[in-house]
Image (cartoon, rainbow, N blue to C red; front, top):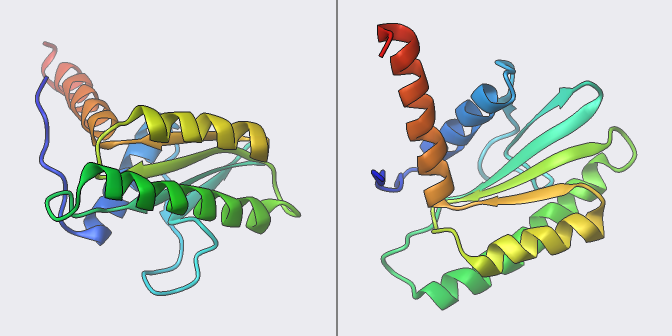
Amino acid sequence: MFQLPPLENHEGFEKLIRDICRIIFNEQTFELYGKRGEEQNGIDGYKLINNEVIAFQCKEKDITSKSDSDLIKKLTLEMKSESGKAFNFFKNTHPVKKYIFASTFKNTKHLQDLAAELSNELGFAVEYWGWQTITRVTVLQLMKEKKKMFGI
């Protein structure tokens, strides 16, 4: 399968994940939440759908300057911290249905297992989207659009 190169711009990465969420959840009003440098309560974007929250957090990483084990350690801490912040932010307002932790780092068993553990702890679905997942969803969506536009 074709592999897209990871984006090197945090804002572009956030917009990509927002756009993927718009497509997957068939909800064009997914928006980014706050801006870089502000306290964002563990979320870069979210949408209330049927009185339940679907939220995402993006972590763009320079995969060329650190070892895989260093990046996994950093992402582990960030996933725990950010998902906990999101839980606290929404706990008295709306139930969270899904929390997506997206990264330009690759899919790894460790981070996918951590997402499953956090799902059990927090009481809502936590998913880790590594770059392979993001690429696959993007390419599949492009193929779907091509079929729709050109009938092939």
